[in-house]
Length: 111
Length: 111
Image (cartoon, rainbow over all chains, first blue to last red; front, side, top):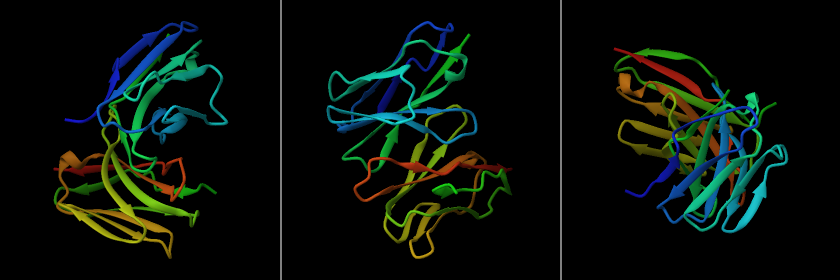
């Protein structure tokens, strides 16, 4: 089945230790998104790639970076995680930017 | 005022009840309307997708969009305990690139 896959599903890191989350998709969608979702809140868009074009949200901290080496893969790098970065990180994809399909998420714990 | 308003609930109903979930919005440029279901600690799952005004039915689920009132609804017939989840409405402009979410409504269906 075509899908959005996120690895790892659970990630524990130490305060200040860099971490990378990965997302892959078999939908062949040209747009990929990274969201942060905290408990009982709606997903918050961090950035997205429209094809190879990177689009950063104005309020996304510099601590968060992303890479998209090809159509199928996208990575979220958190350079120096703080306690406030503990959250569920969701990857989503869409064709041309409308209906979005989400992966299962990576739950990040910062100790 | 938020762009999309959604009552967070929780909404508790007995098994077999008809459930009505609603969102209101302020941006008349929204054209695509989606409902996502999110189980605890999982990624959002696309349930229904509607373009502009009208109704759409899929099994026990019916989505309604009334653009004149800026009001969208999701109806669930014959609700089941497995429907217990958070339901997120989301919408996007015709040529927009950012999905705007409601806060999500927690639904509990009791057997």
